[in-house]
Image (tube, rainbow, N blue to C red; front, side, top):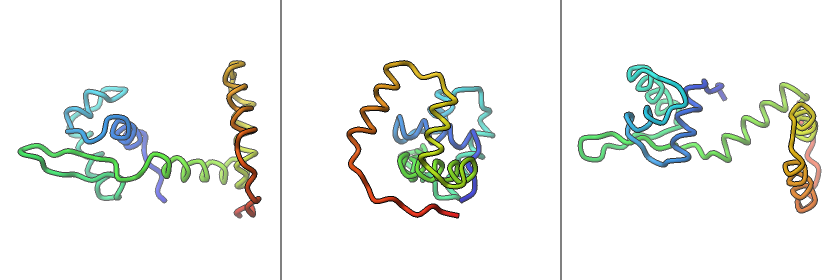
Length: 127
């Protein structure tokens, strides 16, 4: 899976949060200033790669994320685990927790998730 660029991820974030949007609406919600031509190029790339779809409604085109947020997160997480820990999701989570300054509430939330999660069979480590 080719890595998505920061602008592509920003478009997907907006579409996941807001649903179908016209390019001007996407541009207004960008976390940084993006030129119209650049945004249209990003949108074209997302459609061509299958991460987004485009549908004409009246005179306007609306863009929608076709890749689910959960699926994209899972793929990116697996890629990070491969790169940083040789494929171990648990080790990646451990390293992230150790690297970040978590509040007591956040630590408690992680404990709760760990306790509530049903035990699953261990998967073999990918190489």
